[in-house]
Amino acid sequence: MPSHHDRNRLPGQTPGGRSQQQEQPSQALQKFRQLIQTRSFTDDEVLEHAQALGRELASYRPRGEKSDSRTQVRKFYNLIRVANNTEEATAKVKLRLLQAQIAYAVARDTLSKDFKNFFDVALEQILKRGNVKDQLKEFTSFFEAFYAYFYFHSPKN
Image 1 (cartoon, rainbow, N blue to C red):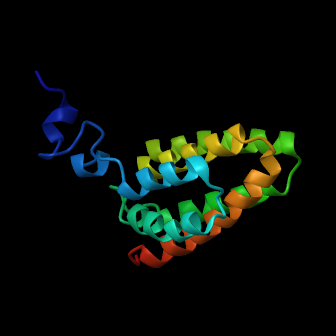
Image 2: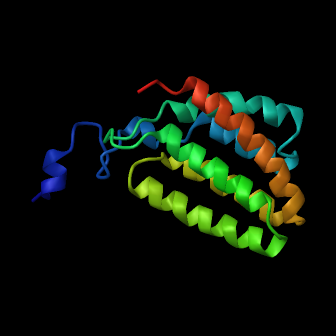
Protein backbone atom coordinates (compact mmCIF):
# COMPACT_ATOMS: atom_id res chain seq x y z
CA MET A 1 0.00 0.00 0.00
CA PRO A 2 1.44 3.40 -0.93
CA SER A 3 2.41 5.73 1.88
CA HIS A 4 0.58 9.01 2.40
CA HIS A 5 3.55 10.73 0.72
CA ASP A 6 3.10 8.59 -2.42
CA ARG A 7 -0.64 9.29 -2.56
CA ASN A 8 -0.03 13.05 -2.43
CA ARG A 9 2.67 12.97 -5.09
CA LEU A 10 1.82 14.54 -8.44
CA PRO A 11 2.42 12.54 -11.62
CA GLY A 12 6.05 12.86 -12.67
CA GLN A 13 7.29 13.70 -9.17
CA THR A 14 9.85 11.77 -7.20
CA PRO A 15 9.22 10.83 -3.55
CA GLY A 16 10.97 14.06 -2.49
CA GLY A 17 8.42 16.11 -4.42
CA ARG A 18 10.74 17.34 -7.17
CA SER A 19 9.74 16.70 -10.75
CA GLN A 20 11.67 14.10 -12.70
CA GLN A 21 12.86 16.84 -15.02
CA GLN A 22 14.63 18.58 -12.13
CA GLU A 23 16.37 15.30 -11.19
CA GLN A 24 18.19 15.20 -14.54
CA PRO A 25 21.75 16.51 -14.34
CA SER A 26 22.12 20.03 -15.62
CA GLN A 27 23.90 20.24 -18.99
CA ALA A 28 25.72 23.34 -17.81
CA LEU A 29 26.83 21.48 -14.68
CA GLN A 30 28.13 18.57 -16.75
CA LYS A 31 30.13 20.96 -18.93
CA PHE A 32 31.45 22.77 -15.83
CA ARG A 33 32.61 19.42 -14.46
CA GLN A 34 34.46 18.70 -17.73
CA LEU A 35 36.01 22.15 -18.02
CA ILE A 36 37.24 22.31 -14.46
CA GLN A 37 39.08 18.98 -14.76
CA THR A 38 41.84 20.59 -16.81
CA ARG A 39 41.40 24.35 -16.38
CA SER A 40 41.51 26.88 -13.60
CA PHE A 41 38.42 28.62 -12.26
CA THR A 42 39.65 31.85 -13.84
CA ASP A 43 40.32 30.37 -17.27
CA ASP A 44 38.46 32.47 -19.84
CA GLU A 45 36.28 29.58 -21.06
CA VAL A 46 35.38 28.57 -17.50
CA LEU A 47 34.48 32.16 -16.57
CA GLU A 48 32.45 32.47 -19.75
CA HIS A 49 30.60 29.28 -18.79
CA ALA A 50 29.46 30.97 -15.54
CA GLN A 51 26.61 32.51 -17.54
CA ALA A 52 25.17 29.16 -18.71
CA LEU A 53 25.58 27.68 -15.25
CA GLY A 54 23.93 30.70 -13.60
CA ARG A 55 21.03 30.60 -16.07
CA GLU A 56 20.36 26.87 -15.57
CA LEU A 57 20.59 26.97 -11.79
CA ALA A 58 18.37 30.08 -11.66
CA SER A 59 15.55 28.11 -13.29
CA TYR A 60 15.09 26.02 -10.12
CA ARG A 61 12.43 27.31 -7.73
CA PRO A 62 11.73 25.78 -4.34
CA ARG A 63 8.37 24.15 -3.68
CA GLY A 64 7.57 26.50 -0.83
CA GLU A 65 7.94 30.17 -1.56
CA LYS A 66 9.07 30.91 2.00
CA SER A 67 12.70 31.30 1.03
CA ASP A 68 14.39 33.20 -1.74
CA SER A 69 17.00 31.16 -3.59
CA ARG A 70 18.77 34.40 -4.59
CA THR A 71 19.27 35.06 -0.92
CA GLN A 72 20.53 31.52 -0.31
CA VAL A 73 23.07 31.71 -3.13
CA ARG A 74 24.21 35.16 -1.97
CA LYS A 75 24.63 33.77 1.55
CA PHE A 76 26.98 31.07 0.27
CA TYR A 77 28.88 33.53 -1.92
CA ASN A 78 29.48 35.68 1.17
CA LEU A 79 30.63 32.63 3.15
CA ILE A 80 33.05 31.70 0.34
CA ARG A 81 34.49 35.22 0.55
CA VAL A 82 34.93 34.82 4.32
CA ALA A 83 36.70 31.46 3.83
CA ASN A 84 38.93 33.12 1.23
CA ASN A 85 40.18 35.56 3.89
CA THR A 86 41.34 32.91 6.37
CA GLU A 87 44.43 30.74 6.83
CA GLU A 88 44.65 27.63 4.65
CA ALA A 89 43.82 25.12 7.40
CA THR A 90 40.86 27.21 8.54
CA ALA A 91 39.71 27.65 4.93
CA LYS A 92 39.56 23.85 4.46
CA VAL A 93 37.39 23.51 7.56
CA LYS A 94 35.12 26.35 6.46
CA LEU A 95 34.72 24.81 3.01
CA ARG A 96 33.73 21.44 4.48
CA LEU A 97 31.24 23.17 6.78
CA LEU A 98 29.81 25.06 3.79
CA GLN A 99 29.40 21.75 2.01
CA ALA A 100 27.32 20.48 4.95
CA GLN A 101 25.29 23.72 5.09
CA ILE A 102 24.51 23.43 1.39
CA ALA A 103 23.32 19.85 1.89
CA TYR A 104 21.05 21.16 4.66
CA ALA A 105 19.66 23.87 2.35
CA VAL A 106 18.95 21.23 -0.31
CA ALA A 107 17.13 19.11 2.28
CA ARG A 108 15.04 22.18 3.18
CA ASP A 109 14.34 22.64 -0.54
CA THR A 110 15.80 26.15 -0.69
CA LEU A 111 18.57 25.13 -3.10
CA SER A 112 18.65 22.57 -5.90
CA LYS A 113 20.67 19.39 -5.95
CA ASP A 114 22.42 20.88 -8.97
CA PHE A 115 23.70 23.72 -6.79
CA LYS A 116 25.04 21.17 -4.31
CA ASN A 117 26.64 19.21 -7.14
CA PHE A 118 28.20 22.42 -8.49
CA PHE A 119 29.71 23.19 -5.10
CA ASP A 120 30.86 19.60 -4.56
CA VAL A 121 32.64 19.53 -7.95
CA ALA A 122 34.33 22.87 -7.23
CA LEU A 123 35.35 21.82 -3.70
CA GLU A 124 36.84 18.58 -4.99
CA GLN A 125 39.00 20.55 -7.43
CA ILE A 126 40.03 23.11 -4.81
CA LEU A 127 41.19 20.41 -2.40
CA LYS A 128 42.86 18.05 -4.86
CA ARG A 129 44.94 20.68 -6.65
CA GLY A 130 46.81 21.72 -3.53
CA ASN A 131 47.46 25.30 -2.45
CA VAL A 132 43.92 25.76 -1.21
CA LYS A 133 44.37 29.52 -0.79
CA ASP A 134 45.18 30.09 -4.48
CA GLN A 135 42.42 27.75 -5.65
CA LEU A 136 39.90 29.35 -3.30
CA LYS A 137 40.85 32.82 -4.53
CA GLU A 138 40.19 31.73 -8.12
CA PHE A 139 36.94 30.01 -7.16
CA THR A 140 35.78 33.16 -5.36
CA SER A 141 36.21 35.08 -8.62
CA PHE A 142 34.32 32.41 -10.56
CA PHE A 143 31.55 32.33 -7.94
CA GLU A 144 31.18 36.11 -8.20
CA ALA A 145 30.57 35.81 -11.96
CA PHE A 146 28.26 32.83 -11.47
CA TYR A 147 26.21 34.67 -8.83
CA ALA A 148 25.85 37.76 -11.03
CA TYR A 149 24.42 35.65 -13.86
CA PHE A 150 22.32 33.61 -11.44
CA TYR A 151 20.80 36.81 -10.07
CA PHE A 152 20.25 38.23 -13.56
CA HIS A 153 18.42 35.10 -14.75
CA SER A 154 16.41 34.51 -11.54
CA PRO A 155 12.74 35.40 -11.73
CA LYS A 156 11.79 38.34 -9.59
CA ASN A 157 9.61 37.56 -6.56
